[in-house]
Amino acid sequence: MTLKEFTQRIAGINVCQVREVSDDYQEQVIFNADIRQWSAVLEEVLGPPAKPAGVAPSGTDLVLCQIYGSIMKNQTLYRKAFGDATILAMLWPWQDGTHTTLKIGRVAKT
Figure 1 (cartoon, rainbow, N blue to C red):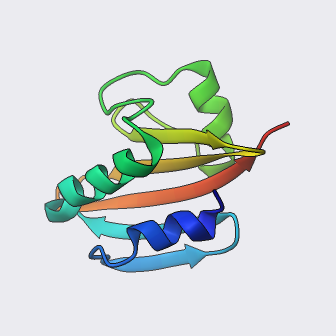
Figure 2 (spheres, rainbow, N blue to C red; figure 1 turned 45 degrees about the horizontal axis):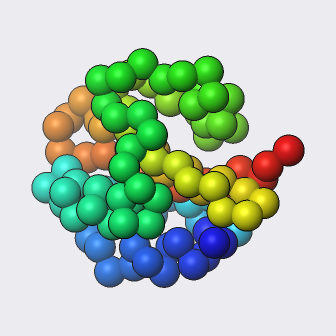
């Protein structure tokens, strides 16, 4: 699965702000009010969270997410291998309780 194909699957869900879009990465701000809808679509495509919020990240999680700013205990990570790459989706909640940054990236297998 390409990042473009993945992005087409999540099109139509409410987004507060699009920050960056490229062939291998996208970043947007979403509303927490829509988090259930986002989580359902992320799970449909990538499976259940590889690292739920509140769970310490594994060494593998840290290595995979390093290029995108790492992953912390309060954040959620979805990931799934597709052929020669792994698609990652990271939910980074804001302290305001209203917004979450969604980072979606493609990491080539080495």
